[in-house]
Image 1 (cartoon, helix red, strand yellow):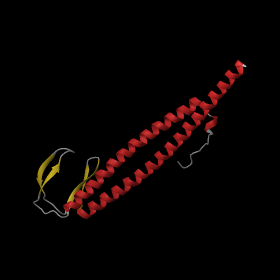
Image 2 (image 1 turned 45 degrees about the horizontal axis):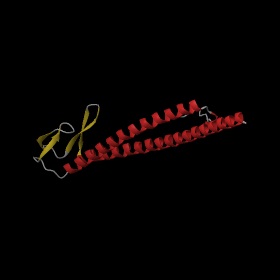
Image 3 (image 1 turned 90 degrees about the vertical axis):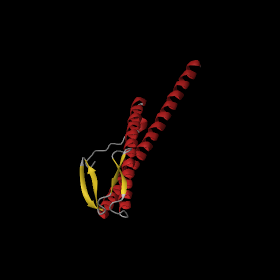
Image 4 (image 1 turned 180 degrees about the vertical axis):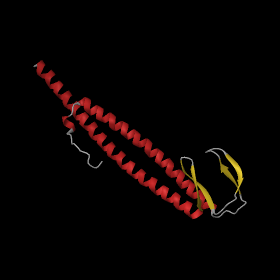
Length: 159
C-alpha cells in the first residue's frame, strides 16, 4: 500500500444510494475476513494438534501399537517403527523428515505465524465493522433529514 493515494471523503456529502453501496461493500469484506478468520483458526488448531502429537511421541517406544490416521475420520492400526524422526507435511504434497525437537519447533513457529495472521485479520475486521457502523449512522441521519424535510413540506403545503 506504499505509494497509494488516499482520498478522504465526507460521508455526509454522499447520496444515499452511494452510502448503501459502500455499506454493501463493507458487508462483503467483513464476510470475507470472517471466513478467512475461521480458516486461520482451523489451521492454528491443526498445527497445535500436530505439535502435541509429536510431543507425545517423545515418550513412546519402538514397537508400540497406535492408530494411524488415513483421513480425519478413518484410522488403521499401526506399529511405531521410528521414535527419533517424523515425516511432516509441509504442503502441496511435500513431506520432510525431521528430528522430534525440530518438528516440535516447526509446529511452534507455524502456530505463532498463524496466530499473528489471526490478530492482523481481526484488527482489519474490527476496522471494517467500525467503518460500517459509521456508514449506517450516516445513512440513518440522512433518512431522518429527508423525512423531516418531507414532513415540513407537507405541513407547509397544508398551511
